[in-house]
Amino acid sequence: RGTFSTIRKDSDNRFIFLEDHLDRIINSGKALGLPWIPSKSEISERLFDIANNQTDKQPRLFRISLFENLLGIADRITNSFGLSVEGISFRYKRAQPSHKQTSDKKLYESLNNLDINKKELILIDPKTNEFLETATSNLIFVEQKHLVIPFRNILAGLNLTKIKPILEQRFEIQYRSPHCQEILNFDEIILVGSGRGISTLKNFKEFDWQSSNHSFHLEIKSIYDELIVPPTSNARVSI
Image (tube, rainbow, N blue to C red; front, side, top):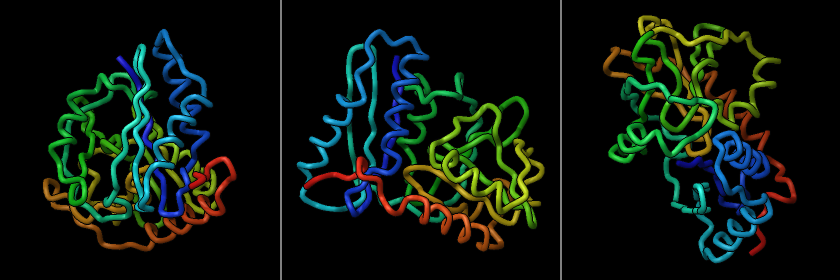
């Protein structure tokens, strides 16, 4: 039993939305009733110790895991940031979507067998046939001049949470989970997450769908890029 959060360290040795990730994993641990919750400073110290011992500056993903009596941190080089990928349907709904949980083994075991540089698991509610999210990211559907963003029965990622107020100022948004039968109505399907940044689906062969535009993707990516620069002082790694 446990929870985790995935945070990106970019090529400038900055942890993106560090404080938010720390708050999330601690709050999730409390909500799940874990008997031992480390402090933010303890997690940060462990995180910086690992990062400071790395000699290269390649972007990395750090997975911070909190179990009943254990804090685990693992990292890997990320090559999937911003890549356009193929959608693969996966009929699954998280048991408790409000928290990332290690108990979602079926989902993460399937993800481990996937080439994430080329493909992404798209979660579909097995009862309603509605699109929810992906295994790693939130979804934004583009239909003509407005956005459709699922908001129920999903894990609301920090990256989407951060850009949502700006999106609401610039675009017309419908908050709902679109049905599979609607997919051909969408011009773009955008992915938002720590590992992928702002990326797109290039096709979804099961539904005979392929992207027909990139204008919204480029605009939302520009919003995201502006949001993460300049870095905050406590998100920097001292080498």
